[in-house]
Image (cartoon, rainbow, N blue to C red; front, side, top):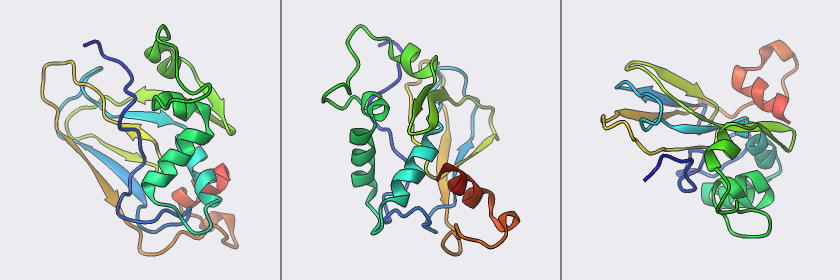
Length: 182
């Protein structure tokens, strides 16, 4: 099978809690790399810019949302996410002749004010990616023939995010990022 952008597995993390834009349950997504990972070597695929769309979506969910419901809602509400995840429906699935690598990785598409593009992570053993907790990501096929070892860890916060601080300089980088997206 040829390497391609998958339709399965796209998500942001946090199956164990109800999601709110200011949830303390996850402060960062850490991708910890224990072996070298080259191109098409099984690195995590990330939807660059997706954290902005997810932040806006979560800000609208006054009572919070489960991860599964949130992912389904975003996939239905935004054509790009629907196509990425292979959801059937009006204008949401790519034609069989469309090259998924070209469409998702070689182009940037503007969705809800965010510029989206799929990026493959490559790394050397010992590298750590610190990612926004709302970042859409998925595993990819390993065509290198070399096993890869990595894990992702969530890092909970001590308290809810505060998106209404008095001084702009008091925001954490995560709070600032979410405020900028909103």
